[in-house]
Image 1: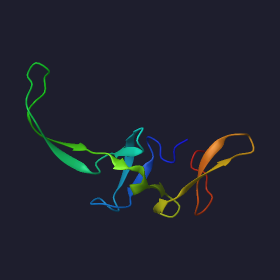
Image 2: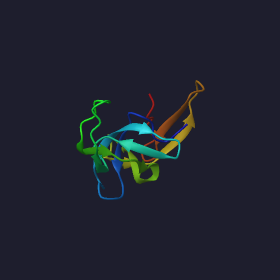
Image 3: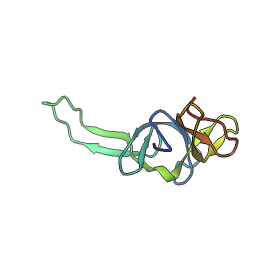
Image 4: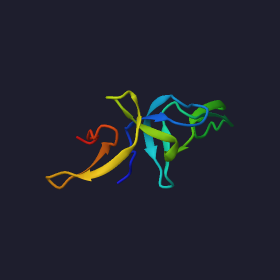
Length: 105
């Protein structure tokens, strides 16, 4: 079970986008995450009329390492660390370490 999942709201902890908030679009196998509208890069693309691709400069998200983002805790309004615990009914869930609030309810 990963600490950060697709659809989670995260805050960037380091880098040029430090402090910005966004939703996780994708989690990759090498412990990297793609966050919507964060870590944008410009890519110069050549047009391909057969594939229907227009040429020009395209902005797209680039992956960040999962250690550089923290899960957003709405109770505190800040990024928080994540822990795991097993509930009485046998489910394994994520929880915020600062206030022991369960993330996966």
